[in-house]
Length: 406
Image 1 (tube, rainbow, N blue to C red):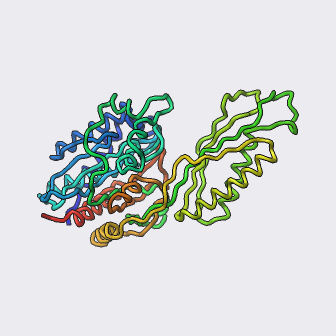
Image 2 (cartoon, rainbow, N blue to C red):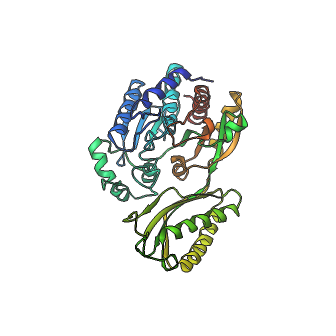
Image 3 (cartoon, one colour):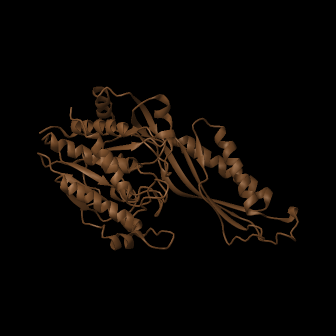
């Protein structure tokens, strides 16, 4: 079985981390910014040096192709190079650069695959600049129309289409073209593997994710002259809604809720909050459980709003259904882990990944490796170099089993 070069993979990770490096050891490469363009260019240089042909599609997804012996759909490996504003050095990046290391390894072992191999760097996976997350893979698979994706704007009103033009990342590779399979390696972004002393997570599928936008509308008033019983305070109402969410989640095992953003419109220090919006992220392995929780929360929110004299509107922002990964591809990952004598376990992905969209397009599987303390989306995000190597070994051998030797 071919074995990857761990030090070379680590050097590649550290070199990429220098682009958009932050003061506290993380990386900041928001999608289609100058920093992201520099990261894309570096990856492109490495890919071409490995004999790969680099190309792009209309939403800026970047691909690097290694020819196979037969003219059949490619086996695709990859993830993303964009990061959170003050993100870590490994989230997504590992998936792209471990795929590059897999190809370098096949080159060194003079192994030609039956099917072509491609590396994918998906645009705007993080959703930190343009929403929703996984935008590039969504547009590729048709889950979002291309025109809608190109029209998505960042906080400054700059559209994704304009940004693609600015950095020269758009191409003419067809969207929704056939893939034989897709494999993505990623840090776990949770504490399970580390806590269990396990090196490889064999991901069998992803949990359901719902993003909601909640708007609370009260009435402005003077902070010093409006008696408390007369107030229709949007912020105090939202605080009770947050407690309502926490209580509801505690009633269902495995249900997760996060209020990640909260904004008071036209806020002032001495004015009662009148217009507030917050985001709500709900997740569970079962779609029905999440949908039931949303229905229940709508009813509970309405009761809070009526009692406090405010209006509360709940609007869906994004929906990602739970889905199982392809059992054959998952089996390739398991067999590679067994053959390499890794400590491994099956698990469900708690985070969203490009693989979720790809799983509706072609047979798909994921590989997780541990991250220190389960910490991710943070400058202190950290992994062990040895775990990165083991993960890359599993990746190259799973991909080789799928693509076949010529």
